[in-house]
Image 1 (tube, rainbow, N blue to C red):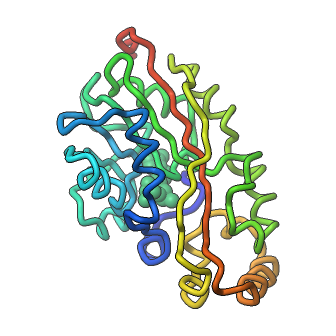
Image 2: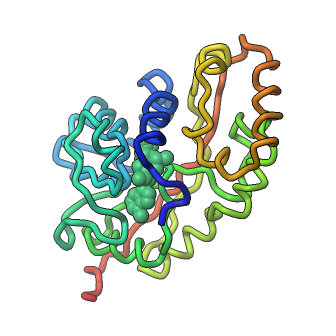
Length: 249
Ligand SMILES: C[S@@+](CC[C@H](N)C(=O)[O-])C[C@H]1O[C@@H](n2cnc3c(N)ncnc32)[C@H](O)[C@@H]1O
């Protein structure tokens, strides 16, 4: 079970509030390319692809044809991309089929990290990469939302995995951690661009706090300087699979 349910309400809020354009994601484009060294032939799986925004970006940025897998029918229904049903524990692809796997703000939803890591290892070629974009427990500093909703940072500290938890879960499946770095993004040109349409349902940490805490945070958000740019830094965790073929289960 994911941390929250991606039903039609959540999917609509996600599409309205969490899609980012190429200008916003310039840093991600560069850092992913740094590790992945993508070519048009790179077989890149977007796991937990949601509404497919990263698949479209990878197609535009790198000229490759991404694969996408996503468990929520409501998220898939909003996608411009063709995305298969499935989840991290059940990936409908053959062994050794892909060069790399991308997980963007998915890892905290995985109910069994070692099982997901083993399944990801199965579909990856030996030496393949896993690139994880996430907010991790213990690293809240880059996330601007937490200045308005400090209780959400506390909730994240207990309900999200840390980068070390994730690296350990993947180590059990034969992965070594290569890098962990914050990557800045321009979430919105100004706070004023998002304040009127701000929707709690688009942000998992805000669904983990009480209604009164949320109301207080929303009041802080609304009274903050609307001209300030909204810059966030989520982390990029990069792992490499061992050079051996995955063990048969
Ligand atoms: C915050 S959304 C991120 C969507 C997309 N990766 C993005 O960044 O635009 C989290 C996604 O993880 C998916 N998810 C939840 N549990 C999952 C699982 N066990 N395996 C794969 N994806 C999962 C949800 O359905 C949802 O689409």
